Image 1 (cartoon, helix red, strand yellow):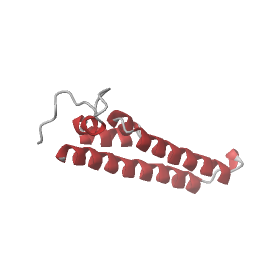
Image 2: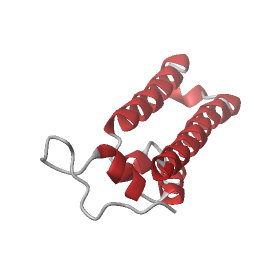
Image 3: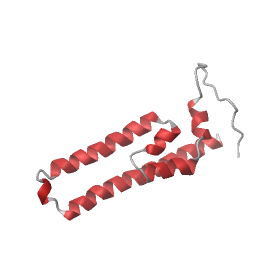
Length: 109
């Protein structure tokens, strides 16, 4: 395992370097946080704000699309609920794999 610097500092000098923070994060924990609570909590742990905003936007768009497809909440088809849940689970799985690989790649560099 590569050695991490004791105090990672950005070239500007006002805080930790983004890659050093990502390398210091545990890959499996970032992946687990993206799956369990969902909606990109692992990205918050890794301090990857852009990835978090993208995940939040995609999940919000998925919710909005589901709401627009069913204007009458009393007549919701159980299959459409499964499609909605499946989409969110797919988003959680993809973001978990991506968070794991990004942290692992940062540790290798």
